[in-house]
Image 1 (cartoon, one colour):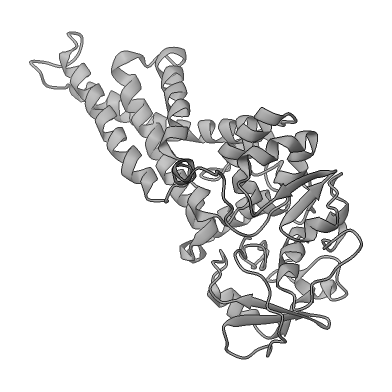
Image 2 (spheres, helix red, strand yellow):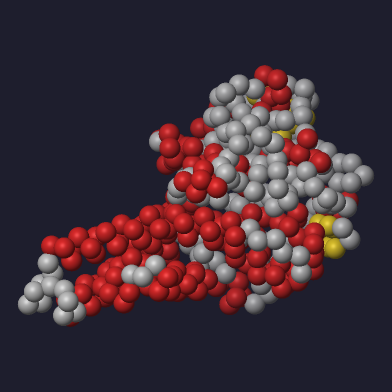
Amino acid sequence: MCEARRGGDAMEAMSGSTASSSSPEVGTKSAHWGFTIGGRVYRVPRDFQHPGGRELMDRHDGTDIGYLFRGTAEEGRSTRSSHVHSGAARRLLEKFAVVPMQTERGTREQGEEDRGGPCTLDAAGAGRVQVVNGVAVDLDRPLVLQVGALLDSYQVWVHKPELGKPRFFQSEVLEQLSKTKWWVVPFVWLPVSLWLALVSYRRLRRDPGHGAEGHLLLTDSAAMASCYLFGVLFWSVVEYAVHRFMFHVSTSSYWPNTLHFLFHGCHHKFPMDDMRLVMPPAGALPIVLLVYIVERYLLGFGAIFAPITLAGTLTGYVCYDMLHYHCHFSEFVKAYAFLRWVRRSHMDHHYRDNTSGFGISSPAWDLVLGTQRKEGKGARGTACK
């Protein structure tokens, strides 16, 4: 789902509706984009959100895009500006075929990623009911209490991306609480950051070992600024650790699977669900409290400087979540080379290799710990892509 230039999967980010059954006029301006692969025709509605932007889709409208996909006869035509796409991209594109490609095992992915794991979708898996190793998951029913039953097949299933925005809970109250608009993150956490900075300021003024007659010394101001900056940089550690070791922990029993799906698995299964991309404040709160304990007691910032350090960390978190949202849903990132690289890396994490690219706001820890994105590699990890 990254940009098609060098690293993007042009069709991966499509979400929402099903293919039309009528034959399209490929290349004409209509309610759909039209594409072909060989003699196969695909109709993609023009109201799809796509990280590569409408310009990218318009550019390929009415053309044969087989050279963009692994495992097709035209693959060899790919160049640096038209990267070969993953099997997951072809599988999602098949949902928009005028006549869906069926086999005795259901709709198959194209290319070598077909052999990416032990996941088996029975014939029902081609539709809205997926049968994974004998366990049925109905995408049209509330999902949260279904996914745990997949047991050791869950990790394969959850990293196999799907289109759409599923329902989580039968209860309307719980369903709405599970959704969060992107602007909630800065709306909640930036005022909290400001309040934490004021807490440190007031504690420092009252401390007899600092300041003079209620005013901060230059060294005290420098100390507060340094703690805030440290907190911003410390976010990269938190982001990498939480994403790799908490959100990508391997689960294989009912309740761990269920909790994993709620916190992060849902985003990998339905990466274009914009209402479940950022974490609800209530879900983030336990992590925020844990980070505060680490900064105050383990890192030794103490009662005075720990609040402003956490303010910096929360600022880093807000920047991260805004960048994450733009990677999925905005054309803004196309304007800057670094942001295009961030998008490519993150989309590869979703569609090619879920065992790399854990850092979004910073690649530093991926580079240090050897989990950086590998250019040109096929699908890896637990997903049957």
